[in-house]
Image (cartoon, rainbow, N blue to C red; front, top):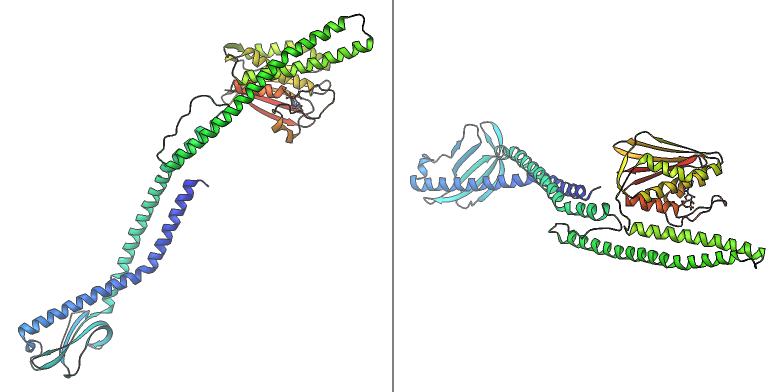
Length: 436
Ligand code: ADP
């Protein structure tokens, strides 16, 4: 799951937990607010009644000393006044029942005793409990709607902010890791971000890449220098052996040994040359200035390799459905690439086998396929066949250095050509080159 999705999900869940808690507490909260409001209102009403009694006199309410009672039309509120014993003192607000015109109604009642004209009176101001709770449920639903709206809004904001915040991370991964080609070319490009952690990550990756680059460079230089240095003594040795073979005063046995030594030196030379070639390709020491058509290139390879085909009795068919002119390529290297692929197709083929080379357009790309009816490559070995010096024990007859496919890969990378391999053991292999 993406980090942004995780953050948004966590935010949404934590906010939902708050909403649930709030919804559970809301009735209690609103009940308390309502009760406080009602009690305050009852106190104010009591003060007003006492003021009126002070200014107008108690006779205004109890002209002949009879208890006074006044109700609103729907019996939601009432005021009661009556004389009480002198020792009776009360100052409370509580819920209590009253029977009004035959109806038993639950009221919130403020009871207050006070002295007036040397008499003690009891004043009751009440409000029906039912009306107090009436506002609760509309208030609850409004609060819930507002809250849900706010949550939706903040979750959306969180999502957008997380997207904005994490954008540099995606850029770092794409620019510095996914799109990175090793060895990398070009200067360091800082990713624009104000977040310290991403800056730190960007710089750390840059340092790591610099380190890898330096190691790559050292390795390339070493291979290049080593192969270069080896070529001279090998050639001197070869010349000496050739001179020795030409002498007549040496025995047949020694002659045979000299021939074997020559062969071994030839192999050594071949390996050294190939290593030098790989390092030169990787050091970008080749130019890409040639123009050549696919059919011409494949025919050149076919001409060069035809003797080997005949040796093994193998048929090769070239089918260029749609010819293409390749621009800005290195002809020598591309020749080398196809030569190696066809050479392997011959080397690992069966007697009287077939090789098919097809060139065609597919889904906007240009594809050249080299397939053979040879021994095939076991599935588990396919990921390693492009590794240097990786050769698998197949047939003792094959001369093998494990450098053919690494060259193919280096040349393909140098020209930004993709390679796909599919193979079936005992049935054959297919190498697909996908041109950009
Ligand atoms: P080499 O052929 O000198 O051993 P390569 O780098 O050309 O080295 O090939 C590496 C390995 O891949 C070979 O040893 C062989 O096992 C396998 N391989 C390459 N091409 C083919 C092919 N066309 N058919 C079967 N196996 C192949």
